[in-house]
Image (tube, rainbow, N blue to C red; front, side, top):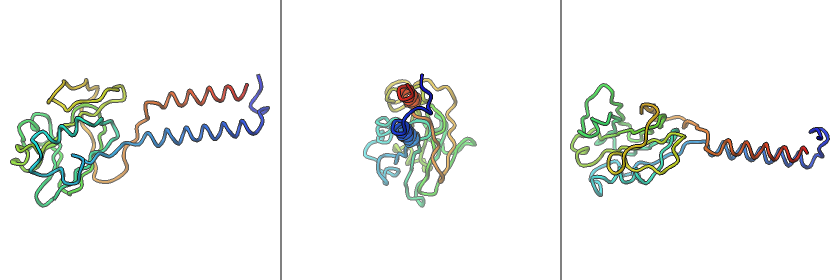
Length: 195
């Protein structure tokens, strides 16, 4: 078996380029995505097209740990609260475990898997459907989620849903599902170039 020192410069250069490209692709794919809630800048307000509009929107997306929800709204008339499921169902706006946002441009980074619930800070708006439930998928789930509690049962959650939130800063990074596969391909390429 030849050592890496006996390899001609061209294959070694090719290997370095391939491994660098693979690494760059893996890094770029590991960043969380940003989702504008409702799909437009005026979705977090009433009236809504239908009372289930926001949950129907959520049901068409796959949210993963590291993704961010962006709520855009008029902070003079509206706000966002992250609440437990019971308060989501009843539109309860008061609770020690509520996280309140009223800056008009709220970014919530999804840091744990499971269901996460949001309501309007205006009770009447919440009762009109201005609320959102999302399911954050863990790395082990590979299927498309449905909107929570409104169609199919929720997937199992290995950890409690208690995302950290911020209105600024970088998104969290999670390794992509293909990371191991890319690493293995690089090792196989190295093996054949060294032989």
